[in-house]
Length: 456
Image 1 (cartoon, rainbow, N blue to C red):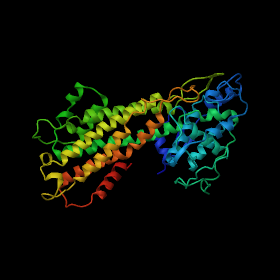
Image 2 (cartoon, rainbow, N blue to C red; image 1 turned 30 degrees about the horizontal axis):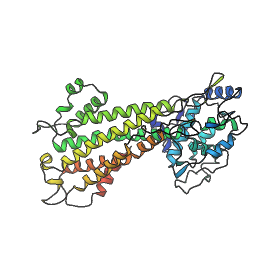
Image 3 (cartoon, helix red, strand yellow; image 1 turned 180 degrees about the vertical axis):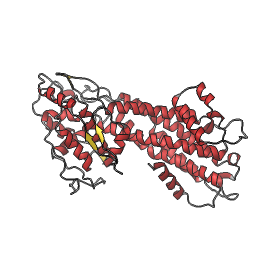
Image 4 (cartoon, one colour; image 1 turned 60 degrees about the vertical axis):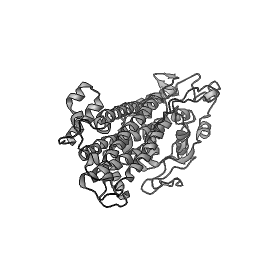
């Protein structure tokens, strides 16, 4: 069944919408363009020194220029490293289109349907990985602008490899072309759309995994005979963090406890609601920060009323800080997952043989701990904060950076190792509940668990 298109109106774009569009599970439709048209009309009447329109950029802010916008695009289209995956580039186009519909850029609104066509037909710009520090995705969007001008080739809808350069397919139609005016060059690229796209994709997928983790934990609770006492409503009411209460309530519904022989279980069980709930709360804060900027006019200068307002709305500190906290919280809950996995290897908790083996001395599921700890080590590395650093560039005129680009990229990279931690626990808990099996490679079991975690 086809999904209804995501209506972009500059106000209601969510992380889930970005994920659906990026992965071609939904098309986009541009909503009313009144705010974009109003800003464009106002921009055409501006007089005096307007940054990027009548002046150079960066340290050249006081240098008057005429018709230098296309050269600005050419000079800034300089990313490095591998091409980003098509879903990330497509998500970036959708985010920038939505931001333009929010108004404030002054860009010619005739570009809006062209961008929508690119998204829906599967054309993406050849955006490379490196080139932004959280103060605007200048390289990615300059590359996009040169594709619109016809100076760089789009990647076609059938080409998902780094080597693919665009050639229009018969189904997609002609490659998108738009004669972006020189004065629209800086306004078009003055956005963190690529960073926000990555952040939205990461938040959506991590939301799915954090939800799935509660079901995985319920299997471990049952396999280890863990007490449900820490999940009681009275416990949650005594410390009313919303994420904690939500996790405990859901786990109570999934876990039908029997009598427990232990007075207290290890923290992997006893503190699961508290730790996993904190991760959900951190994710909620990250989603709010990201979705605010998905629907914001982060333009500099901002065209509002009849004036151009020079400002710092492009700065990514709110998003970067929220994503730093999210990645740290993800490590906390993943650590409890590996702790539960360890108990499932212990006869004291399962009543079976060590490592869920079928006979004494067999290794059983021992190797799952190695895989999970490898993935956890990767998560810890990815959780290193980016917001403790900064950068001073452009002859000192740009003297701070938010590095949300790196925070979003690392959040997206967290998906795979966190999936693996969950998959290892799921395989072990399922084995503990259904009985041991003879030693054999567990790769297929892990692949099946990963498929279950990725199921829509």
